[in-house]
Length: 447
Image (cartoon, rainbow, N blue to C red; front, side):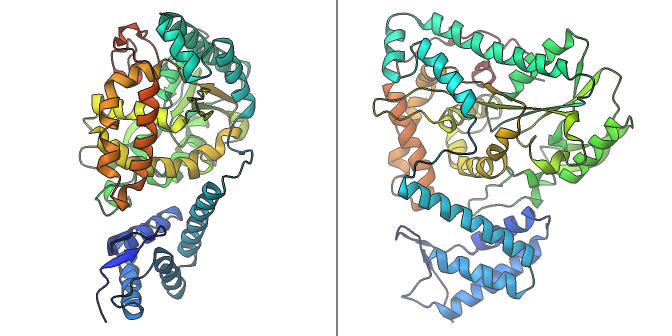
């Protein structure tokens, strides 16, 4: 029985065989169905490796598909049917995504708020910022201040509409859920919405679901040592739901405390009880994930979804991707406020995006209202801060088969930024703009 040194990827690339990726994949599938025993995942991974070493000897190496077949076989033979099902479903989902990209099918997605998109596109066209060329011309004409003013007004009007909808249901709504993918502007929007509601004697009381994280060591980890903490299963969803039910019933609960320095959670730490005019606020990536609020009646929730729904085409007629805008936002925020290297944000983004596509974006059309947080001018603000980084990453990652995602994203964003007219002076950004959440200098209190 020989040791396996390499594995053949779907594109034919030969890369080092890493057994840890198998145990991580098994553990990730287990977490998805409520399991958290790493020892079992590692034991099953050892069985997979043993099976592969028996059936594949040099110079023959297994393909990715053959390894995944072996994982399914071992899971089923060991009686882990639920984990096997989660693994199979994820594998099938990834296969369909790859097939869809190859075929370039043009099918209307169920995960896009089409009515909102048309509204944003109509606004962009009326403001002459619907193409990179027209936008750049306005910047060159010295109209940056006008673009900023109009963009901020459009965003503020969205927040006012959401506030009015909540006030119309104030007699029944007890939870306001503000959700959306990473770096969509939830924190700024929450503060602005809360200020409006406060004028009508409604207090948004935050239930910080970050304190419901399981201990860090219980999260899946990849071969680079990068924890996958982007999934909703990283949170104790059952405990969140129990606490929400009790709070709405007028009971006092004790919120856990999560220490981000140690990666450990302390249960029964902070008391919380609602007052007469209080509404629970949950500002979370996974606010619309059903398990988080499964015990609460639907009419008691107001669900707000955020996304930078920029409607701007490049010279090839392709719309700028919202995920690229959010990636740039998160790079700047991580660097400024979390001491994280922008390159680390880039290489971690595939986890972020995978979780979004599975657990966040599919729920967008269940929201009561969708807010567009995109500012066309933010691209010009980000260019001087990031373009030098994006210009070096394509060369760095182009020959690394383990960093294909980073290569593709950095190449695409580099091309975009090179075409955008820059705004070197970010003092023109209003102090309470959602963009300040990412570049700093906000007049809002984010603590």
